[in-house]
Image 1 (cartoon, one colour):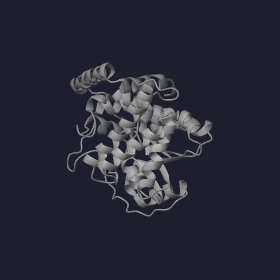
Image 2 (cartoon, one colour; image 1 turned 90 degrees about the horizontal axis):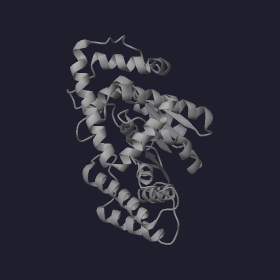
Image 3 (tube, one colour; image 1 turned 180 degrees about the horizontal axis):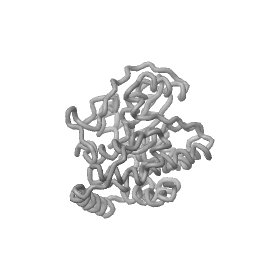
Length: 314
């Protein structure tokens, strides 16, 4: 099972709800495909690629053990991670393995370590990889999380530096991104013979128990853990911010028809001259951030290339 959608759409809250599902272990944020593709791992992994990807998986675990305090914190010690990395390297020392086989083996072991027999992972941007994932993992199911695009954009623009990078945000880009994600998910729901459940963030916050039961039914299981209380985790308490009216206007101009189709009301926003300085500053920050990413980070180049390639679906 894979949780897809857009970042800042409530996918972490969804994963928290899913942590209450009986016999399921869901890893919060896993982008191994992006790492593998950035290093050119298109076939059986070379020794160097294998070691780097296992190191990446170990780093993912260590970061959550050291810095998470809620459902996303694995019940592992740092020694457990070292032992698991060594065991993975030994398992594939003489056995050819592809990146997706490595990921499946790692998730199976992690799920068993937590006393679960079924596994899933959250990778919001993988809505662009649904066809590939469906071919690699027989029996896969997708959970697609969507949220009002104006709230998603606000969350991107004002994200805490510890949880993300505001420089990734631009109103036109993310209105287009939101439209692309929904259209791509709809297209794949029609063309792929793979079950997909849509979950609206607003419904999840309003009724975690009811939406949790929908998820349990979809995944042939039951709720057995404690559900989180409804909350918008994008902003600190009392510090909620929102995008400008001009940014809302851009959003509705770009994604208005899709908003209508998904049941999100427009608010008849207008273009305002007084918003231009903020829009110019946002554009400059976005251009600077993306230039640095493309220059320094091969995985980021993979992500940006994927976005541009998929613009035709938006």
